[in-house]
Amino acid sequence: MTETPHRLAIALFLAVALLPAIAAASGAAPAAPPGAAAVGAQPPPATLRFFNRDIITFRAAYLGFLPAERAAGAADRIAKALAKQGPGTVAMARVPEGLSVSIDGLFVFRVLEGDLDADDGQTFDEARVVVGRRLDEAVAAARQSLRGKAFLQILGLALGATVVLGAAAWLTVAVRRSIRRRVDAHLASRTNLGESERLSILRVIRALGHIVFVLVLAGLLEEWLRFVLALFPYTRPWADHLTGYAGSVFAQVGSAILHALPGLVMVAIIATLAALVVKIVRALARGIEAGRYEIFGIDADVVTPARRLVNAAIWLFALAMAYPYLPGSDSDAFKGLSVLVGLMLSLGASGIVGQAAGGFILTFSHALRPGEWVRIGETEGVVMSVGIFATKIRTPLDEEVSIPNTVVLGTIVKNFSRPARGKAAVLETSVTIGYNAPWRQVHAMLQEAAMRTPELLRDPAPTVLQTALSDFYVQYSLRARLADPLRRPAVLSALNANIQDVFNEHGVQIMSPHYKADPHAPVVVPRERWFDPPAAPPGGGTADRAARP
Image 1 (tube, rainbow, N blue to C red):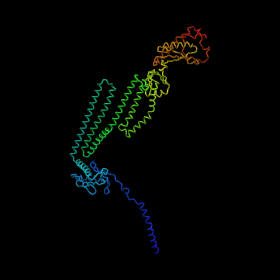
Image 2 (image 1 turned 45 degrees about the vertical axis):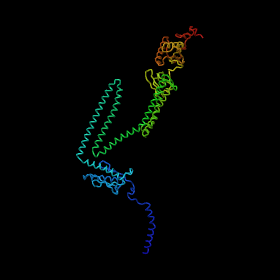
Image 3 (image 1 turned 30 degrees about the vertical axis):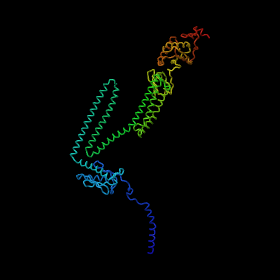
């Protein structure tokens, strides 16, 4: 029994000593009550809607009810108040909490100070006017919808409007068909128009007419829908929104046009100046083509591609100047599209740029000109045109060959229409004759064949060269001047035919002999045969005398 007081004293001492520590621990980490995290958070607003109309937006909680719960309760109380079939009188009284709203003396909801629109600085007096007007309209629309006779009248008006819409649509279709027949008849009566041209014009007119037709039908449908929605009390707000939407669209379009007008005027001025400069360049080009003057060393042969190059540079410069004034050029979509188009051109048009550069090099270097006879690789013919991307050749087989300009620059080009020092072009053909034929006779026969060809020039006279002494035969090359380079294939054919005739007349075989073993006798020409006809010894003497050393 004596130890009990001592134990009680020790327990009391420990409790007193540990009490501050327990209090500090409990203050450092207090237990959060349920829902404490939500204290101070702003509840989401909720809009009170009745009979498809917005009455007020609740922003504050009241007596533990959130804005959404307040809106749902208010809508339910409004419906119950109107269900009593009273006059539907809306009354608003000022109370300490704000505004108390009632219908036929029955409380429906309360407007608190936290429900006012703080951004617009709304007051209770302003809220009284706005909320009272909206609630009066909603109550009137709800009471009107309950009248059966009025509903039947509204339904009849809606059906009548639908009939009018159908008649207007039918009339629009009939007018469209009549206009199309008149346009077709008018174009058919124009005898100066071809069938393809008439069809092209007709397609354009029909496309424009279709756009106008769709716009007219859309306008009729919009007016019908707005009228019908305005008839019914519940859908009347939709009609108001539809009218406002159409008006806002037209207002935006008009505002965009007005804002774009100064930029479009600048674009028109820049385009007009560019067109004026292009006309000046065209006049200068025609003067250079006529030979009246020369500018920067540009002659008549290259004036057309030079004019095209200058015109392209002018329009590109005009586009760069007009770009900032284009409507929407400062928008992110326009800028992104410009970057995308530039990237596509830079990646996909490298070959095209190379072709164009090759065309300008060929043109301004005078490597090829239209009307010249050339050989490009394995293709031979007359040059039809040297374009920006390709060169067109007309072959003797009447084929038009298009050769890329980069290929022309990278291969060997033979131009037969540009002889040295203004002479006529050279036409060459070769034959191989055995060693047993006198070379003087072969020379004379080849020259005689050239003289029989009328389109070869006599001055300077045709020449024969022995271009190779092969193992089995001698190669002779006949070269003569050609009057018309474009007649090269035909003249060459006539010359080869004359060579065959002359050699046949003199009994000389045109062949390239080969053998597998040495002949029994040496293949040489005896001295007495050195000047066989049609060859003649020099000086007019006999063959034996001319042959002596």
